[in-house]
Length: 102
Image 1 (cartoon, rainbow, N blue to C red):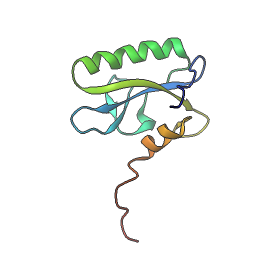
Image 2 (cartoon, helix red, strand yellow):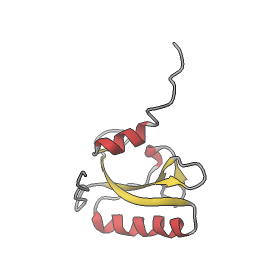
Image 3 (cartoon, rainbow, N blue to C red):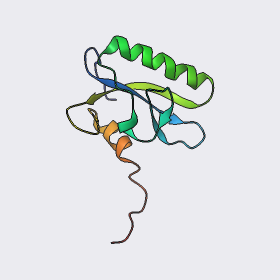
């Protein structure tokens, strides 16, 4: 099993899955959820990340999302790019859907 990344002073955001659709979602500035990673609220460090995660966990208790957690992101690019390979796959969308014919 892969180790979780250390988040200490890396920019990070909160991701989860929408409870109704199962879609990957990101917590926004307005405490809403978006399927677009570029809508995500990004915080600079672990302390701010903990506060953001608390908001997400409260929404998980209200059955809006499931399993929220923090992920480190590279903010030197736009949209922000997840550091971990697994999270990049989640951000880019499903890998099992058929691609439209060219």
